[in-house]
Image (cartoon, rainbow, N blue to C red; front, top):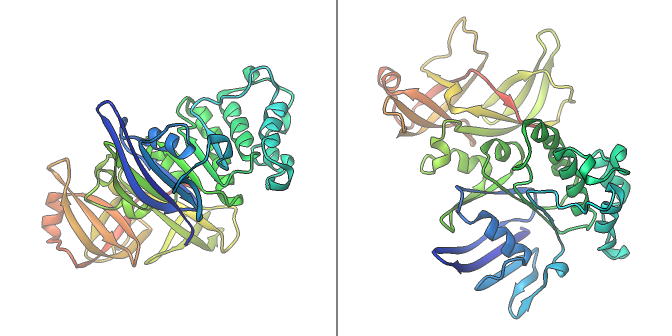
Length: 357
Protein backbone atom coordinates (compact mmCIF):
# COMPACT_ATOMS: atom_id res chain seq x y z
CA UNK A 1 0.00 0.00 0.00
CA UNK A 2 1.20 3.51 -0.77
CA UNK A 3 2.11 5.39 2.37
CA UNK A 4 3.62 8.53 3.83
CA UNK A 5 6.33 7.53 6.29
CA UNK A 6 7.08 10.03 9.07
CA UNK A 7 9.87 9.97 11.64
CA UNK A 8 10.64 13.29 13.32
CA UNK A 9 12.27 14.25 16.60
CA UNK A 10 12.41 17.88 17.67
CA UNK A 11 13.04 19.64 20.99
CA UNK A 12 12.03 23.27 21.57
CA UNK A 13 12.33 24.38 25.18
CA UNK A 14 10.02 22.23 27.29
CA UNK A 15 8.29 20.75 24.24
CA UNK A 16 9.43 17.57 22.52
CA UNK A 17 8.01 16.15 19.31
CA UNK A 18 8.59 12.44 18.78
CA UNK A 19 6.56 11.01 15.93
CA UNK A 20 7.42 7.84 14.03
CA UNK A 21 4.50 6.40 12.08
CA UNK A 22 2.93 5.82 8.66
CA UNK A 23 -0.26 7.33 7.25
CA UNK A 24 -2.09 6.50 4.01
CA UNK A 25 -1.00 8.29 0.84
CA UNK A 26 -4.61 8.69 -0.17
CA UNK A 27 -7.65 10.47 1.22
CA UNK A 28 -7.61 12.98 4.08
CA UNK A 29 -5.65 12.36 7.27
CA UNK A 30 -6.62 14.62 10.15
CA UNK A 31 -3.93 15.67 12.64
CA UNK A 32 -6.03 16.07 15.75
CA UNK A 33 -5.29 16.82 19.36
CA UNK A 34 -5.42 19.53 22.03
CA UNK A 35 -3.66 22.87 21.65
CA UNK A 36 0.08 22.45 22.10
CA UNK A 37 0.06 18.77 21.11
CA UNK A 38 2.38 19.39 18.15
CA UNK A 39 0.01 19.35 15.17
CA UNK A 40 1.34 22.44 13.40
CA UNK A 41 4.94 21.65 14.37
CA UNK A 42 4.65 18.23 12.73
CA UNK A 43 3.07 19.77 9.63
CA UNK A 44 5.92 22.29 9.36
CA UNK A 45 8.48 19.47 9.70
CA UNK A 46 6.80 17.65 6.82
CA UNK A 47 6.95 20.82 4.73
CA UNK A 48 10.60 21.46 5.61
CA UNK A 49 9.70 24.78 7.24
CA UNK A 50 10.85 23.48 10.63
CA UNK A 51 14.23 21.80 10.91
CA UNK A 52 13.82 18.75 13.13
CA UNK A 53 16.72 17.51 15.22
CA UNK A 54 16.37 14.28 13.26
CA UNK A 55 13.94 13.55 10.49
CA UNK A 56 12.88 11.08 7.87
CA UNK A 57 10.10 11.56 5.32
CA UNK A 58 9.18 9.22 2.49
CA UNK A 59 6.19 9.89 0.23
CA UNK A 60 5.08 6.94 -1.89
CA UNK A 61 8.59 5.53 -1.80
CA UNK A 62 10.22 8.86 -2.71
CA UNK A 63 12.64 10.11 -0.06
CA UNK A 64 12.17 13.78 0.77
CA UNK A 65 14.24 13.69 3.94
CA UNK A 66 16.65 11.15 5.41
CA UNK A 67 19.46 8.91 4.17
CA UNK A 68 21.58 11.96 3.42
CA UNK A 69 18.74 13.75 1.61
CA UNK A 70 16.95 16.86 2.85
CA UNK A 71 14.98 18.52 0.09
CA UNK A 72 14.42 22.26 0.61
CA UNK A 73 10.84 23.50 0.81
CA UNK A 74 10.64 24.57 -2.83
CA UNK A 75 11.71 21.11 -4.02
CA UNK A 76 9.12 19.22 -1.98
CA UNK A 77 6.14 18.60 -4.23
CA UNK A 78 3.58 19.90 -1.78
CA UNK A 79 0.98 22.61 -1.40
CA UNK A 80 0.53 24.40 1.92
CA UNK A 81 -2.64 26.21 2.99
CA UNK A 82 -2.20 28.31 6.13
CA UNK A 83 -4.75 29.57 8.67
CA UNK A 84 -4.66 32.92 6.89
CA UNK A 85 -4.96 32.92 3.11
CA UNK A 86 -1.44 34.38 2.50
CA UNK A 87 -2.47 35.74 -0.91
CA UNK A 88 -0.40 38.54 -2.41
CA UNK A 89 -2.40 41.70 -1.72
CA UNK A 90 -0.97 43.56 -4.76
CA UNK A 91 -2.15 40.86 -7.19
CA UNK A 92 -5.69 40.02 -8.25
CA UNK A 93 -6.98 36.48 -7.83
CA UNK A 94 -6.02 35.47 -11.36
CA UNK A 95 -2.39 36.47 -10.92
CA UNK A 96 -2.26 34.89 -7.47
CA UNK A 97 -3.37 31.61 -9.04
CA UNK A 98 -0.94 31.94 -11.94
CA UNK A 99 1.85 32.36 -9.39
CA UNK A 100 1.07 28.88 -8.10
CA UNK A 101 0.85 27.50 -11.64
CA UNK A 102 4.16 29.00 -12.80
CA UNK A 103 6.04 27.45 -9.88
CA UNK A 104 5.52 24.07 -11.56
CA UNK A 105 7.32 23.12 -14.81
CA UNK A 106 4.85 22.68 -17.66
CA UNK A 107 5.69 18.97 -17.99
CA UNK A 108 4.72 18.36 -14.34
CA UNK A 109 1.42 20.24 -14.28
CA UNK A 110 -1.45 17.88 -13.50
CA UNK A 111 -4.22 20.34 -12.60
CA UNK A 112 -5.20 22.84 -15.34
CA UNK A 113 -5.93 26.44 -14.42
CA UNK A 114 -9.56 26.19 -15.58
CA UNK A 115 -10.16 23.05 -13.49
CA UNK A 116 -8.87 24.67 -10.29
CA UNK A 117 -10.97 27.78 -10.92
CA UNK A 118 -14.08 25.71 -11.56
CA UNK A 119 -13.46 23.37 -8.61
CA UNK A 120 -13.26 26.28 -6.15
CA UNK A 121 -15.93 28.38 -7.95
CA UNK A 122 -13.65 31.37 -8.54
CA UNK A 123 -14.79 32.44 -12.02
CA UNK A 124 -16.48 35.63 -10.77
CA UNK A 125 -13.56 36.57 -8.49
CA UNK A 126 -10.58 36.44 -10.85
CA UNK A 127 -10.27 40.21 -11.33
CA UNK A 128 -10.64 41.08 -7.63
CA UNK A 129 -7.88 41.81 -5.12
CA UNK A 130 -7.71 39.79 -1.86
CA UNK A 131 -8.91 42.76 0.20
CA UNK A 132 -12.15 42.73 -1.82
CA UNK A 133 -12.94 39.14 -0.88
CA UNK A 134 -14.65 37.57 2.11
CA UNK A 135 -12.63 35.29 4.37
CA UNK A 136 -14.10 32.18 2.77
CA UNK A 137 -13.38 33.49 -0.73
CA UNK A 138 -9.77 34.24 0.18
CA UNK A 139 -9.28 30.71 1.49
CA UNK A 140 -10.84 29.22 -1.62
CA UNK A 141 -8.36 31.19 -3.73
CA UNK A 142 -5.49 30.08 -1.48
CA UNK A 143 -6.51 26.43 -1.86
CA UNK A 144 -6.74 26.81 -5.64
CA UNK A 145 -3.27 28.37 -5.73
CA UNK A 146 -1.87 25.45 -3.73
CA UNK A 147 -3.55 22.95 -6.08
CA UNK A 148 -2.11 24.68 -9.16
CA UNK A 149 1.39 23.80 -7.97
CA UNK A 150 0.32 20.18 -8.78
CA UNK A 151 1.35 18.87 -5.36
CA UNK A 152 1.91 15.22 -4.50
CA UNK A 153 0.83 16.13 -0.97
CA UNK A 154 -1.47 18.91 0.27
CA UNK A 155 -0.94 20.29 3.78
CA UNK A 156 -3.73 22.31 5.40
CA UNK A 157 -3.11 24.03 8.75
CA UNK A 158 -6.52 24.83 10.27
CA UNK A 159 -7.67 26.56 7.06
CA UNK A 160 -11.00 27.52 8.64
CA UNK A 161 -9.71 28.73 12.01
CA UNK A 162 -10.00 32.41 11.08
CA UNK A 163 -13.45 32.09 9.47
CA UNK A 164 -16.83 32.81 11.00
CA UNK A 165 -19.66 30.27 10.81
CA UNK A 166 -20.80 31.59 7.43
CA UNK A 167 -17.27 31.36 6.03
CA UNK A 168 -16.87 27.80 7.29
CA UNK A 169 -20.22 26.77 5.82
CA UNK A 170 -19.11 28.32 2.53
CA UNK A 171 -15.80 26.49 2.26
CA UNK A 172 -16.70 22.98 3.48
CA UNK A 173 -18.46 21.91 0.26
CA UNK A 174 -15.33 22.81 -1.72
CA UNK A 175 -13.18 20.68 0.56
CA UNK A 176 -15.60 17.84 -0.15
CA UNK A 177 -15.18 18.44 -3.89
CA UNK A 178 -11.41 18.21 -3.62
CA UNK A 179 -11.76 14.98 -1.69
CA UNK A 180 -14.09 13.47 -4.31
CA UNK A 181 -12.43 14.63 -7.53
CA UNK A 182 -8.69 14.78 -6.87
CA UNK A 183 -6.39 11.95 -5.87
CA UNK A 184 -4.06 14.14 -3.81
CA UNK A 185 -3.42 12.98 -0.23
CA UNK A 186 -4.26 15.69 2.30
CA UNK A 187 -2.91 16.16 5.83
CA UNK A 188 -5.38 18.40 7.63
CA UNK A 189 -4.70 20.02 11.00
CA UNK A 190 -7.79 20.80 13.06
CA UNK A 191 -9.01 21.08 16.63
CA UNK A 192 -12.66 20.94 15.49
CA UNK A 193 -14.38 17.53 15.74
CA UNK A 194 -17.07 18.83 13.38
CA UNK A 195 -14.52 19.47 10.61
CA UNK A 196 -12.77 16.16 11.16
CA UNK A 197 -15.90 14.01 10.93
CA UNK A 198 -16.96 15.91 7.81
CA UNK A 199 -13.83 15.52 5.69
CA UNK A 200 -11.33 13.03 7.18
CA UNK A 201 -10.85 9.38 6.27
CA UNK A 202 -7.99 8.71 8.67
CA UNK A 203 -6.82 10.27 11.92
CA UNK A 204 -3.48 10.76 13.62
CA UNK A 205 -4.19 11.70 17.23
CA UNK A 206 -1.40 13.64 18.94
CA UNK A 207 -0.90 14.40 22.62
CA UNK A 208 2.08 16.22 24.09
CA UNK A 209 4.17 15.71 20.95
CA UNK A 210 3.57 11.97 20.65
CA UNK A 211 1.24 9.70 18.72
CA UNK A 212 -1.65 8.67 20.93
CA UNK A 213 -3.43 6.73 18.19
CA UNK A 214 -3.34 6.27 14.43
CA UNK A 215 -6.07 4.65 12.35
CA UNK A 216 -9.21 4.89 10.25
CA UNK A 217 -11.53 7.70 11.36
CA UNK A 218 -14.40 5.66 12.81
CA UNK A 219 -12.01 3.22 14.42
CA UNK A 220 -10.56 6.04 16.54
CA UNK A 221 -13.87 7.84 17.12
CA UNK A 222 -15.33 4.70 18.68
CA UNK A 223 -12.34 3.58 20.73
CA UNK A 224 -13.53 3.89 24.32
CA UNK A 225 -9.95 4.19 25.63
CA UNK A 226 -9.47 7.47 23.75
CA UNK A 227 -10.83 10.90 24.77
CA UNK A 228 -12.83 11.31 21.53
CA UNK A 229 -15.43 8.77 22.66
CA UNK A 230 -15.96 10.70 25.91
CA UNK A 231 -16.65 14.12 24.39
CA UNK A 232 -20.16 15.57 24.61
CA UNK A 233 -20.29 15.27 20.79
CA UNK A 234 -18.98 11.67 20.78
CA UNK A 235 -20.13 9.99 17.60
CA UNK A 236 -19.64 7.35 14.95
CA UNK A 237 -19.09 8.21 11.30
CA UNK A 238 -20.49 5.61 8.94
CA UNK A 239 -20.18 5.39 5.17
CA UNK A 240 -23.07 3.86 3.28
CA UNK A 241 -24.44 3.33 -0.20
CA UNK A 242 -27.79 4.60 -1.44
CA UNK A 243 -30.00 1.60 -2.16
CA UNK A 244 -33.53 3.06 -2.21
CA UNK A 245 -35.53 6.29 -2.43
CA UNK A 246 -38.93 6.57 -0.76
CA UNK A 247 -40.60 9.35 -2.77
CA UNK A 248 -43.81 9.23 -0.72
CA UNK A 249 -42.11 10.04 2.56
CA UNK A 250 -39.07 11.88 1.15
CA UNK A 251 -36.54 9.43 2.53
CA UNK A 252 -33.36 7.86 1.19
CA UNK A 253 -32.11 4.52 2.48
CA UNK A 254 -28.42 3.78 2.93
CA UNK A 255 -26.99 0.28 3.17
CA UNK A 256 -24.53 0.22 6.08
CA UNK A 257 -22.86 -2.55 8.03
CA UNK A 258 -25.66 -4.39 9.79
CA UNK A 259 -28.64 -3.12 7.81
CA UNK A 260 -30.23 0.03 6.37
CA UNK A 261 -30.63 3.56 7.72
CA UNK A 262 -33.09 6.21 6.53
CA UNK A 263 -32.11 9.86 6.04
CA UNK A 264 -33.88 12.83 4.48
CA UNK A 265 -34.15 12.34 0.74
CA UNK A 266 -30.98 12.97 -1.26
CA UNK A 267 -30.95 13.99 -4.91
CA UNK A 268 -28.31 11.36 -5.63
CA UNK A 269 -28.52 8.16 -7.68
CA UNK A 270 -28.69 4.59 -6.42
CA UNK A 271 -25.14 3.45 -5.68
CA UNK A 272 -23.91 6.88 -4.55
CA UNK A 273 -21.75 6.78 -1.42
CA UNK A 274 -22.70 9.02 1.50
CA UNK A 275 -21.34 9.65 4.98
CA UNK A 276 -23.50 10.00 8.06
CA UNK A 277 -22.81 10.88 11.68
CA UNK A 278 -24.55 9.16 14.58
CA UNK A 279 -24.17 10.92 17.92
CA UNK A 280 -23.80 8.61 20.91
CA UNK A 281 -26.47 10.54 22.80
CA UNK A 282 -28.96 9.81 19.97
CA UNK A 283 -28.71 6.03 20.34
CA UNK A 284 -30.94 4.07 22.74
CA UNK A 285 -31.07 0.31 23.26
CA UNK A 286 -33.82 -2.28 23.47
CA UNK A 287 -34.00 -6.03 24.01
CA UNK A 288 -36.59 -6.34 21.24
CA UNK A 289 -37.45 -4.11 18.26
CA UNK A 290 -39.90 -1.50 19.50
CA UNK A 291 -43.51 -1.75 18.33
CA UNK A 292 -45.41 1.37 17.21
CA UNK A 293 -42.40 3.63 17.73
CA UNK A 294 -41.56 6.91 15.99
CA UNK A 295 -37.95 5.72 15.61
CA UNK A 296 -37.53 4.11 12.19
CA UNK A 297 -33.77 3.48 12.29
CA UNK A 298 -33.25 0.29 14.27
CA UNK A 299 -30.22 -2.00 13.83
CA UNK A 300 -29.31 -5.31 15.49
CA UNK A 301 -25.98 -4.86 17.29
CA UNK A 302 -23.70 -6.66 19.71
CA UNK A 303 -22.47 -4.97 22.88
CA UNK A 304 -18.68 -4.81 22.43
CA UNK A 305 -17.75 -2.74 25.50
CA UNK A 306 -19.35 -1.03 28.48
CA UNK A 307 -17.35 1.82 29.99
CA UNK A 308 -17.90 4.51 32.66
CA UNK A 309 -18.75 7.97 31.38
CA UNK A 310 -17.49 11.33 32.66
CA UNK A 311 -21.06 11.69 33.96
CA UNK A 312 -21.49 9.14 36.79
CA UNK A 313 -25.17 8.78 35.90
CA UNK A 314 -24.31 7.45 32.44
CA UNK A 315 -22.42 4.65 30.73
CA UNK A 316 -20.69 4.59 27.34
CA UNK A 317 -21.31 1.52 25.18
CA UNK A 318 -19.45 0.44 22.07
CA UNK A 319 -21.73 -1.42 19.67
CA UNK A 320 -20.71 -3.76 16.86
CA UNK A 321 -23.13 -3.28 13.98
CA UNK A 322 -21.63 -6.00 11.79
CA UNK A 323 -17.99 -5.07 11.35
CA UNK A 324 -18.39 -1.34 11.94
CA UNK A 325 -19.04 0.37 15.26
CA UNK A 326 -21.21 3.02 16.86
CA UNK A 327 -21.45 4.43 20.38
CA UNK A 328 -24.35 4.83 22.77
CA UNK A 329 -24.60 6.96 25.90
CA UNK A 330 -27.30 5.61 28.19
CA UNK A 331 -28.02 5.97 31.89
CA UNK A 332 -26.53 3.45 34.28
CA UNK A 333 -30.07 2.79 35.49
CA UNK A 334 -31.20 1.84 31.97
CA UNK A 335 -28.23 -0.51 31.60
CA UNK A 336 -29.12 -2.15 34.91
CA UNK A 337 -32.82 -2.50 34.00
CA UNK A 338 -31.84 -4.14 30.71
CA UNK A 339 -29.14 -6.20 32.49
CA UNK A 340 -26.75 -5.44 29.65
CA UNK A 341 -23.53 -7.41 29.32
CA UNK A 342 -20.72 -7.52 26.78
CA UNK A 343 -21.32 -9.94 23.94
CA UNK A 344 -25.11 -9.71 24.04
CA UNK A 345 -27.28 -9.00 21.01
CA UNK A 346 -29.58 -5.99 21.38
CA UNK A 347 -31.25 -3.41 19.12
CA UNK A 348 -29.84 0.09 18.61
CA UNK A 349 -32.55 2.69 18.09
CA UNK A 350 -31.06 5.70 16.29
CA UNK A 351 -33.12 8.81 16.94
CA UNK A 352 -31.25 11.11 14.57
CA UNK A 353 -28.81 10.71 11.67
CA UNK A 354 -26.87 13.66 10.23
CA UNK A 355 -25.64 13.69 6.63
CA UNK A 356 -21.98 14.78 6.54
CA UNK A 357 -21.27 14.49 2.82
